[in-house]
Every structure is written in structure tokens, then in C-alpha cells.
Image 1 (cartoon, rainbow, N blue to C red):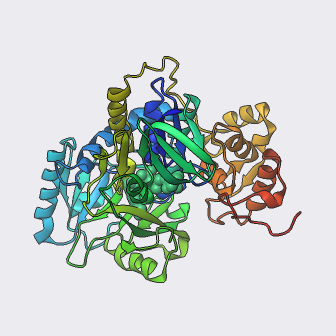
Image 2 (image 1 turned 180 degrees about the horizontal axis):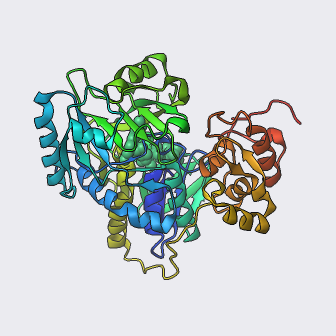
Image 3 (image 1 turned 30 degrees about the horizontal axis):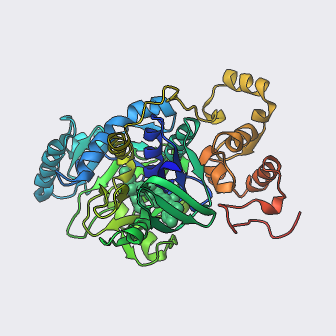
Length: 475
Ligand SMILES: Cc1cc2nc3c(=O)[nH]c(=O)nc-3n(C[C@H](O)[C@H](O)[C@H](O)COP(=O)(O)OP(=O)(O)OC[C@H]3O[C@@H](n4cnc5c(N)ncnc54)[C@H](O)[C@@H]3O)c2cc1C
């Protein structure tokens, strides 16, 4: 019997798992997919929001502010890509400048540090020379940042795992039976029992809640499509540029990613299908239409890929983080749409307090807060590279040319705790396949390495688990 079962290994579930690993608790995370960060946490804008946007008093506002504050220490402990690059909210006509002031006031009310400023066009151009001619003023948000959403999630999970949390992948919760002092979760891998269940199942959080409670929820998938541009244009902007909504609707953002690409999007369309991650001509067309309001020229020939993510939108509009009224010890963490990535560390802390209050566990004296990332050959100087190659010659063989990823890094990504089991797992841990050629060159070699490390045939290697095979013939 587990003390705690967390359903969902997205950023929310993994942040909770890490916080709980600070205590002597028998905790397990169940994930229906083959890896962590396989849901919404893999495809979003990657912004650590400053906190000016949510309505004061909401859980979104509280978690956003606290989550944002926690990132510097987390980066130090968990070694994931994060940068406070500052965000700007752009205003496109004089009458709307008062809306920037309103936004600033809302930020102050929420607890954003009092370093925000409203700048005129000339001042703004000194910060961002590629701003379009439409921009008349900007609000600066110095505490805004950018993060790699999947590496952040992987880092939280790896650290939770070395501190004792068990992860079960390819394990889908199908039904939940409420017993007197526990819950029995029926999964495709058998029954698993726990005293406390934490529902962090993202888009499917409503379904899991509705299995046990009479208070029903409905989560809608709100799709956001993106265009990702080559690193050669990654420095067209240095800050994250939001558009103040206009009569023409909500805008799109233009931002550098923490890994050096340029990103534009997202759109916003409600869907019934919670698995629909297709990009569409309309969606991408809308980004091409709206982004020129922000920057002078859209480098359309430098698009390297497009992708979509699904927001878990619940009608109340706020995060739902609470013990279910008619189900003691069943805790919902649902409706975690934006700013959920920013808020995840604070949600972890919030849930930890609830659990500590309930079970009064001892502290885990062995808790080790430190996780080191895979050595990044592309970021090293030549002396560091030589040293690494001396230790392990596999670091001297480049597999992904676009992103300069070595065989050593790929093998490390498979061998480490909660290591990669498929091509997407390697990609998210090392960036092999994330570059301009989108794995056209390195895929074959990465399949070889995965097959060798996992002791399987090349044909057994998948893109993201289950039936997503990449080779049809038994080579
Ligand atoms: C377009 C877009 C842009 C965004 N931009 C930002 C941003 O810039 N900044 C920000 O702070 N936030 C942003 N967000 C929000 C952020 O991405 C989410 O809030 C966050 O990723 C949610 O994480 P999660 O762990 O709750 O959900 P998920 O990552 O979806 O994780 C839930 C997990 O539960 C698993 N699961 C579901 N059902 C079951 C089951 N029955 N059994 C077992 N496992 C199950 C799923 O497979 C999934 O892995 C954005 C979201 C979108 C879609």
C-alpha cells in the first residue's frame, strides 16, 4: 500500500513528487504514457510568467507569484535551462497606454516586485531594436523568464526518483474504487492501492475526478499552435514580447527559447478531442498574420517546425487545488492551464503542506536536493571537451550535427535514473533531433544506440512508446 499515489507525470505531478520526497512517505507516480512530460508539459510557450496577468485573489495569481520566486533556487539545485530574460507587454495605440498602467497595478496587487516600468517607443527600441512600427509603449516585467519545460519536468522527476519516489510508466488508471481508508486504482498493469490520491492528470483530470465524486467537472482542450524558428534567428529578440489584447483579439507572443530558437504563437481554439495535436493551415496562418504587429520582419524561411499544445481549461477559469468534498483523501490538482508551468513548484509546496498536515510524516534525512544535467558538449570549451573525451571517448563522436549532441550524451540520457526509453525521450533529454534538420541526419544512429542500450532490435525502438515504431522491417 502506498501512502500517496500521484496520477500524472507532467510538471505538476513531478513537482508534487519532489516536494513529497523530502519526507518519509511511500509515494508513487502513475503515468499512462512511456515517459514524464508526455502531455501538456512538453508543448507550451516555456515562459516563467511574472504574475501580472491572473486576477488578484485567485489561486492562479498566488501560485504564479510564488512559483516564479522559486525558480532561481530550483535552477541551482536541479541544473535545468532557465533564464530571467524579462518580458515586455506591447501597446499599439496611445489610448491603450492606460491598460499598461492597469496591468502594472494588477501585478503589484498580485505581488510582482515593484520593478515594472512603462517605457515609450524610443526607450523600448533601445531594448529591442526589432520591434515593429506599431509599438507605442511597453510595460517591462523584469522577473519574467524562459525555461525548458520538458527538461524542467525531467529534472524534478529524476530528483524525486533518487529520493525514493517510484514511477510507473505505461500505467493508465482505468477505474478508481473508494474503500474505507484507501483507494484502489485499477490500471492496465493491475490494481494499485494508496491512502491518498493526488489527481494531477492534466486534460483528463475531470475524468478521474468524475470516477469518484458526485461533484462533476468538465475540462476542455484549448489548443495552441506554434511556429519554431531556427537558431540563426534566435536573437532577433532577447525578451519575451506579449501583445496587449486589441479590438482584433488576443495576440500572440514572440520569444527566444531558452535553448536559443525563436518561438511564435500560440493560437487558442477549443476542441472536443483531447488528443488532437495537429497543426493547421488556419492556426499557423493566424500566427503569420498576428506576429508582424510585434516585430518588423517574420523570418518565414527559417521555420524549422510547428507544434501544438492543449490547455486543460476548466470553466471556472481558476486552478482547482483541493481535497474533494465527498471523497476524503482524494485531492484534485486540475484545471492547471497557464500559468501552470510557472506555478508547478508552488503547487508542489502547497500540496506538501496538505499532506504533512494529514499524515505528519518524518522528514527524509537522506533527501538530496541536487541533480546534475547531462554534460552539454555544445556549451563546453575545448579543454573541457578534451577532458570529457579522455574519460569517455563516446563524447568525442557527434551524432546530432545541428545541435552538436554526442554519442556520450545520448548513452547518458538512457542510462540515468528514469532514463530515455524512446526517441522522444532522448530528444528531450539531449536535444538530439531538435535542430534544423529535425532528426533527418541523426535518427538512424540514435535508433542504433537505443537498440543497443535497451537490448532490443532496431525495429523495437519507438518514437514515444506503445506502437509508435519508426522502422517497418526487421533489420
Ligand atoms: C499552448 C500552451 C501554452 C502554455 N504556455 C505556458 C507558459 O508559457 N507558462 C506557463 O506557466 N504555463 C504555460 N502553459 C500551461 C502549462 O503548460 C500547463 O499548466 C502544465 O504543463 C500542466 O502540467 P500538468 O502536469 O498539470 O499536465 P500534463 O503535463 O498534461 O500532465 C498530466 C499527465 O497525466 C497523464 N494522465 C492523464 N490521464 C491519466 C490516467 N488515466 N492514468 C495515468 N496517467 C494519466 C497524462 O498522460 C499526462 O502526462 C501553457 C499551456 C499550453 C497548452
